Image (cartoon, rainbow, N blue to C red; front, side):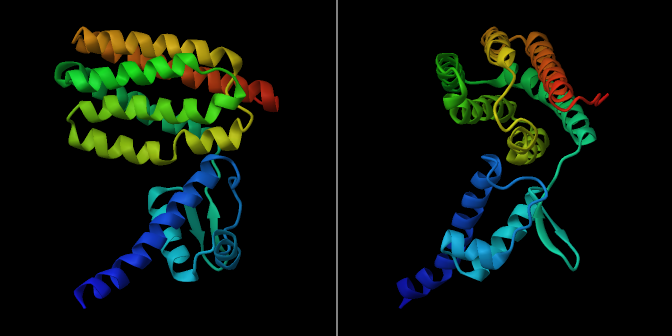
Length: 233
């Protein structure tokens, strides 16, 4: 009796979580783009999941900032503007260097080894066919450092940002991949950050992280300017 009751309670949650996972992936991969409307009937048919878990999944994604509810219209994928890129990088530039500095003082050897492996794997991957894996490894690399900081509110805030950034910016503005020069620069930057963490040097870790983010922001803005023929500054 108890087991049956537990099954009934957990099944809807499992379906909701499955829907959240699938929709997140579709947004990250650019299958759902900024501004796309998310109709429950169409999603239910495509995912093979009933309306209620879909509805709950959309609420979860709205709380994460991936989608937005428009009164009398429905739910759509959040569409970023160029100003949003500047704001997002401003937040990361304020918080991630602090997290890296704290991580340099606290990080444990198993976490350093995990970072070495993530960095090594990224250095082995090249080209558009490896893009999805590189992006996933990059996220894990940055969040591993953030979590090693032990700074509760930095961790909470940056985890929230990384839920939808940079996946949505990439899929919306650079669906075909990063600028060619970005790959080598990112690997070099990550090596510098990792070396600072291994040296337990907070100032070096903070500086390397800030330089990495500033370069990444500028590279993205330059690519968008070249792609769209606009000046985002």
